[in-house]
Amino acid sequence: MPSLGADMDHGKIVEWLVKPGDYVRRGDLVAVVDTDKTVMDIESFQEGVVAELLVGLNQTVPVGTPVARITQTPAEVPGPTPEAPPASVARPVAAVPPPAPAPVAPPVRHLAHRLGVDTDRIHGTGRLGAITRADVEHAAASRSDSARPAAGPVRRGRAEPDREESGRVRAAPRARRLAAELGVDLSTLDGTGPDGAVTVRDVQRAADTREVPGAPLAEPPAAPAAPEQGGQRQTVAEPPAQAQQAGTETPATDRTAALRRAIGSLMSRSKQTIPHYYLSATLDLRAAMDWMQHVNAQRPVAARLVPSALLLKAAALAARDVPEVNGFYVDDEFRPSPAVHLGVAVALRQGGLVAPALHDADTLTLDELMAQLRDLVGRARAGRLQRAEMADPTLTVTNLGDLGVDCVFGVIYPPQVALLGLGRVQEQPWAENGMLGVRYAVTATLSADHRVSDGLRGGRYLARIGELLQTPEEL
Amino acid sequence: MNEQDAREAVRAALRKVAPEVELDDVDGGARLRQDLELDSLDFLRLVEVIDTDTGVDIPERDYPAVATVDGLVGYLGSHG
Image 1 (cartoon, rainbow over the protein chains, first blue to last red):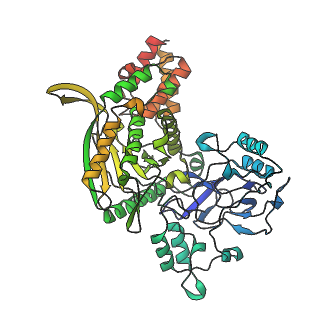
Image 2 (cartoon, helix red, strand yellow):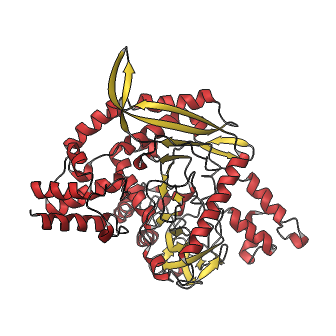
Image 3 (cartoon, one colour):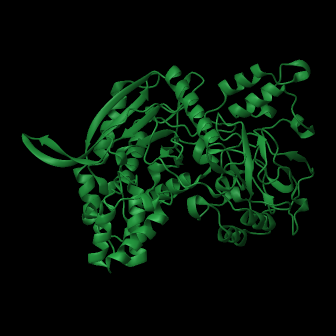
């Protein structure tokens, strides 16, 4: 059971997406887990064949509990198996998720395996870069069979030391629990306790020095808590699994309390450790709104844009120009992120928020961004998010404009270093060149980490968003 | 379409877009954004559902006219 957030200590399997005998690799979705906050798909952290499901449906287990056993040999897979690795090692799924590779559905994975195609080497043409059956077949067909030995599923470097192969890492229960909470993989630690057991101190040290998110073993807090209470909407469709279970194991009041505690603890940590500074700028949206209304007038409803899409795209592009707002503050230093994964705050029924990521928002066209935004918000409200979406945001945007709020001064979502707040898009009196007119405008606010940037750069970020919005056709 | 059909179409669309709203408690003058707490994406989906179900395509310039439940019913009545 992976930790899907710094505050998560248990999870319930509500659906298995694989069955014994299925071939999976790192990143494949294997199960649907209900946490106190949402329902999320979890990935396999290993490659191999599912030998056994260790946790039953609707069973709640602590974080760190092995949920399935994956046998690491393709030899048990029916069909031709090129270059089967010599050893057959069974081991539990590790507790720490690796970064997600291009998504591949288990059946496609299985096909790739059978054809001896390494999916790491092919470019996915499916949705979100997913590798499709056709991609695999194409790769298999275009390969010169004699020139190169058929590559089996190439195992990527395994960071885990050998000792894990022989069984569990020695660790005190408290250390084990803390590791799960902090998303630290026990098997990567050198224990300093008796007989090499991993201690609480070892785990804390590892958590403090680990890589930035995106690198192996990275696990930023994926708590749903976002910067402020309230949000776009207070209500959310109850996830089906949760609805069935409501009133039995996790009554709504417990969930609400747990969610409030999670938000409270994350926001306290933010306010205690991050020296916030706040800026506000009113952005001229005349060009952006004129362009959008013109475009929308020629489009069917399903293809229309909303102002949020333009604002998010401009926010993502501007983050490329002002990298000080995009990344993580880890281990006493700022690590800018090369990618812009924009966290989008979405309100939940209990009054909390989730802020899942629009991955690589700066590279999406407006139409792609719009489609992904609708998909993401819909799934967030239905309680169906993927782990990577919860863990990856490098900069969060909260948009309270739909509630009629003029501007929002948010709390940064650690370990991120900035939060962009957007108020209501509305017509305002606008003075320019000695003339007074009426224009659409929005108040954008930035809460930023003073350890990383100063008002000059923060102001530049807001101004850059405004500049980009003057040429909406180029967004 | 007559008012009865229009009202039923609006209720059906709201059930799809905002299933948590208790439609029986909703007043005709309720504002979709503020009172029913639909955000811009929900509203877009509502317009989309109505277009699919009734064939009435509400252009963006008419959005102010359909800001309330009754406004939307009236719009469908005169355009559908």
